[in-house]
Image (cartoon, rainbow, N blue to C red):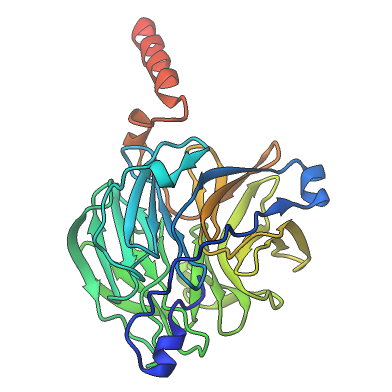
Amino acid sequence: MRFRFAAQIVAGCALLLGAFAASAPAAMMLTPTATAAGFTLSTFAFNFPFNGNGVGPVGIGFPSSGGVLVGDYATGNFYRLSDVDGHDISVTPISAGGYGSSQISGLANSGGTMYVALQASNAVARITDNGTFVAAVASGFPNSGWGGLATGLVTNPNNGHLFVSEPSSWGGNPVSDLNPATGTFTTFVGASFDGMTTDGNVLYGADISQQRIRGFSLSSGNYGAEVYDSPVISGLDGSALGTGSLAGNIFVNTNGGSLIEVNLATNAETVIGTGGSRGDFVSVDPYTGTLLLTQTDSILRLTPPAGGGFNGGNVIPEPATLTLFGIGGVGLMVCALRRRKEAA
């Protein structure tokens, strides 16, 4: 999610709201290579409002009580959706609103609690599973003076802390390590990250000042050391790690409407999708093992080939499995519990 309002920083203006665009953005299509490999692409939700910079839905999170929580950057509204494809946002009730344009950015679930990065306020807040504001957690994250504000948000699965990124095309902004229980934060690394992802061993992020994916170690003996640097990827933004047969690859959503797979060992790039609109954050669906990627007015779902999956770092606590809806999980859980009782 490239720095959303750089123009207003240079001009010394207030928030850039932007007029809502009228024409429908282009739709991403899988490349023949991706189709042959077994990937499929579907539309999770569409008809999101978007601003004059082509930014609409950005934050995607997964509450412990089930479903998918989506935050719209252009309007400051949240939508609580079941985890099935085909949602038309133009006829979907708003779950929570009033955050204002240029606010709702990254979402994360830590320890069963939902958090949101409020970009224009340079703050992180605790919210309900429907997106309603509960309490401020922290604000005033450090930046270089060029306006990079709290944007990306990902959970450190090792300790439940939140990594908060502050992307700026000019660089110089840090990634903060925030303890949501106390509201205190420290600088993790000086990297101008936008979207981030982690497997608990390395924090990867889209460094928009260098136009590269960079990785920093989370291991105790090498904490904060840079361990990965990709080739230049123009317009990079959201990212997620592959698992299973896709392990060793990172998937990058770009502002130019393409989705790229990068091999972490060789840096070889494979184009998965092209022809889309502005791509921002991505989020791994922990219930289905698929990847939800934002576009200007929609969210697409990338389903991996058999044996593959994705990892984004936001692990949903175990109790969530009791309340999943929209993915057929409830029936399976009831059957499993019944079999346990019979066995007992």
